Image (cartoon, rainbow, N blue to C red; front, side, top):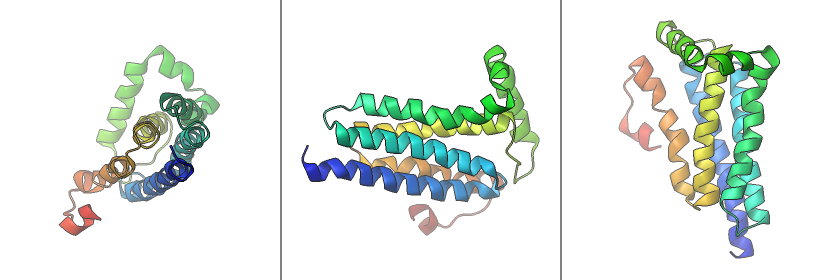
Length: 172
């Protein structure tokens, strides 16, 4: 890997982080704006930038930087649950917590206020999706394909609200 191609991993990760920012803003019609967006961006920034920086430092390593990004990204993903004492609830009855999230999503009217276990679920989902992007950028060197993950989140709003989206908006 040449010196110039080393840095393209970091540039791709920054572009992917920008894509996540756009996707999270796009979700503000489904989920009410609030601290969850900052937490989700922190998850994305930690996971993507750590993976990219470690890949720049050690270009031969592919999986280790991605795993390190997952571990570092897990810190802001779990921090609100840890702070508010919901970790034990997740540990004791994860199926029950997922049921509470489902009920909250099904019965809530858009924009749904993101707090409590819904915040935890969104941050964990964000961690998994961001890690998929980190694997694509850092592990497989697939820059453009990694943008498909946050781009797919832009389709959540029309799906939930039943809004017609023009074809050019999907392509954008």
